[in-house]
Amino acid sequence: MKTIADRLIEDEGLRRGVGRLTPEKIQKVFKELVAGECGARMKTYMETCVRCGMCAKACHYYMSHKDPSYTPVAKVSQTMWRLFDADGKVDPEVIYQCAQVAYTECNLCRRCIHYCPLGIDTGYIISVVRRLCHKLGVTPQYIQDTAHSHSATLNQMWVKDDEWPDTLQWQEEEAREEFPGLRIPLDVEGADFMYSVIAPEPKFRTQLIYQAAAIFHAAGVSWTMPATPGWDNSNMAMFTGDAEIMARVERAHYEAAQRLRVKRIVMGECGHAFRAVYDVANRWLGWKWHPVPVVHSVEFFWELIQQGRIKLTHKFAEPVTVHDPCNVIRGRGLMDKLREVVHFLCDNVVEMTPNREHNYCCCAGGGVINCGPPFKNVRIVGNSIKAEQLKATGVHWCIAPCHNCHGGLDDIITKFDLNMHTKFLGDLIYELMEKPE
Ligand code: SF4
Ligand code: SF4
Ligand code: SF4
Image 1 (cartoon, rainbow, N blue to C red):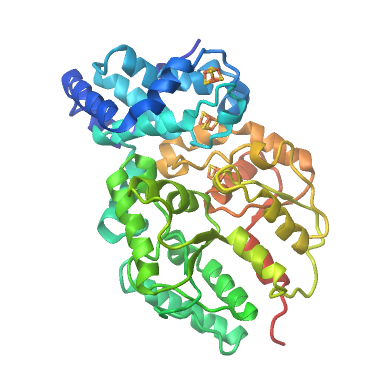
Image 2: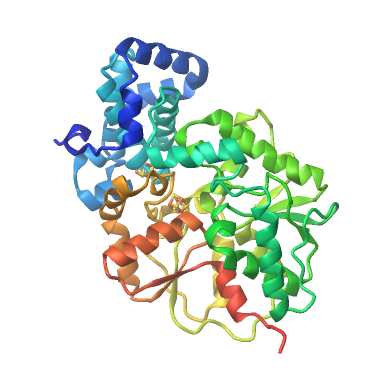
């Protein structure tokens, strides 16, 4: 069987990081991590995995490469179990290999939990490997840059404090030409909800902010966006294993909502950001539940439709398919609401097979796309199974309510020449909704 050692890719961040390590330092940090952060969950997984391999077919990497070293159990054997076997005392090169597996060959999509008869969460184990690599200073160069940006600016894209309100004002001015009287309300205390987005939106996908503002304006809802840091709901530090920065970012996000005294937070169409805000960072902060209720756009659009606040001029006529993002479907169970929204908007919906909580990941998530060009082909070739799934629908449009999914799907569509296009729900609603004459 091949191993990770057969496919190592040079990355400056990983190479520089392992250059500073010794077996003794690795062992010390490993032991501290196991004693301080792992607890019964890791021990239970370690002692119950029977190496049966039933998780193999869950993983899109294995299904695409058909190489056993890409199965969930092999990924864990090559990383965490290997470290435990050596009591953490390994050669620095082993940490390079662990980092490559953990950051670039697992999307933390958690599909494999459904296929393991013992319910072992490989995504959790791999995220602990990432945590170790972070503590050892061994992270891929590109994703580390985004984590540094979070640390310095509280957003992922080095957006400066003045660029943020400037961008919103620019989008408001543009949108007012189409929707007279439209506002992007900044820092309105007591609004019903705070709308938050990921930093790539103001950086290079401003039309999504425009479209959201148009939908909220037409729906007549009470909303606001924070003028200060805390507006970015994304969290790449969660994926590098930097739990401290991850928690700082999420605390700022919740504190922005508390300062504005809103009733809840509505998050834009992003899966990983939702995972950070809804599921991971709040736990790390030790909060029993969220200090401010939080919903994903899928759920919010569903509510607006139920309340009759979205009026369409027509439905999308061409056949579409729906991609179920792991973090809002497996993570939050929004599969039915997603379908109700899509059927409200589209006449002809063709389901992928498998779908809902069994859907294949786009292979961009878990921070894998953020590890940059050195690893791009690994994830694209590593998801030919997704290409087959998309192709089998025979349609040209794919709806995906998640930024990372768009990135991953677009790359697969291009590589496998699928002649498809991706759409956000907000994109579609804006296109189909009633607008002023
Ligand atoms: S299916 Fe579960 S028990 Fe079997 S190898 Fe995979 S993780 Fe281990
Ligand atoms: S990519 Fe998904 S299915 Fe594959 S090992 Fe990671 S969590 Fe499991
Ligand atoms: S990018 Fe989308 S499909 Fe992939 S792990 Fe994230 S939410 Fe899931």
